[in-house]
Image (cartoon, rainbow, N blue to C red; front, side):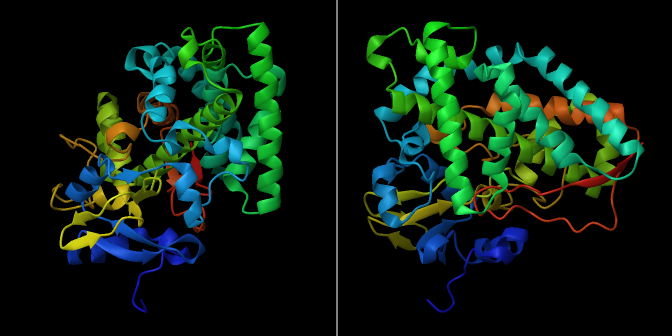
Length: 394
């Protein structure tokens, strides 16, 4: 165990170095993760894709918590679909699927464009005075406004809601996180009661008034599902925008290619998702039966962590995987996972990324990194996102 890799702070800032070595040696390795636990880390594409869809790997929260896995501090918030196996997962997912189909999402394009343009007006004002942080002023703000409109967050509560969500995603203080979760639960519960008596044309109203009685969500399930939609529908897109812009700024030839032909934006978004995936790893699973991966037999009752980022840089699947290529096709990346837990909000995240980065490039002819800044990634082995992205714009 002395040579067992540990997924610590150095890994968070530069996971690629470790992933290159591990992929070369074998498809799976035993590593040390949160709380001193050990898990099997999968880094190659073929094995990662297979395990993401393997029914022998469970995400049932009641069992995962026995490993000391850290989810929300309030147990109510852990009863969402991402922590469930079929049939509960199937029932919960079916209730929200229609809101995230490609057709439903495309109807949101005008609203997302409006939100992006309004935020870019503020970015322009800030940029005229000096360096501007594109994470806090743009990448963080756009998805939060979109998810607020999708859920039907009352206008009077949006500033409070925004502050609470930002705290959840940035704080490392357990007491602050616990208090913030409680405050969010109170907000969500208040909105749910309002939607019961006064439904509107929004996703939260649709969940509250599910037409099939057998499918109706319990109060705890409603709270947990709304909580999941807030975080999953928000943080992934924040990281997609931030990581995508940084990738372009570090690869000026690709930035020039994209500026010359913005019709490439959907293809470019897929490459951003692959190149610096918004999620470093998929959420943790555990084996319910023994599973063979390469030459390793993983016994039942073991934690398994699939690295989406590592799989997306596997040279067995991609030519020149460490090169950004905004014209790359095909691009069957695993950034949104695979199998029954494939990200429900993928169409919305793609659209937001396309609009956010496309509008940014159209608005500003020149965007350059602040040369004096030291870029840092958030302290998370799950998410892959910048704390700040300081740039000069004109």
